[in-house]
Image (cartoon, rainbow, N blue to C red; front, side):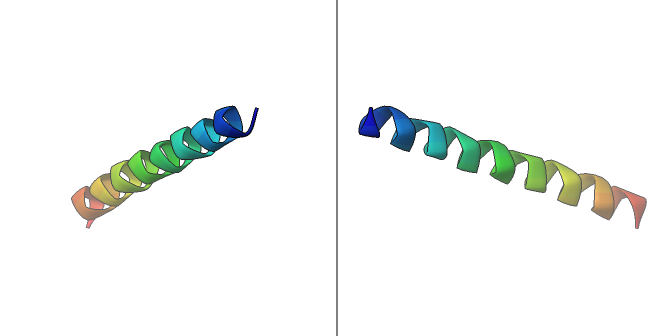
Length: 31
């Protein structure tokens, strides 16, 4: 159960990270 929760947290961090990179890319394109 604990390892599953840790894996879920890891996936969430990766998802947020990729979303941030995507938003940053579009932001630089708009500038």
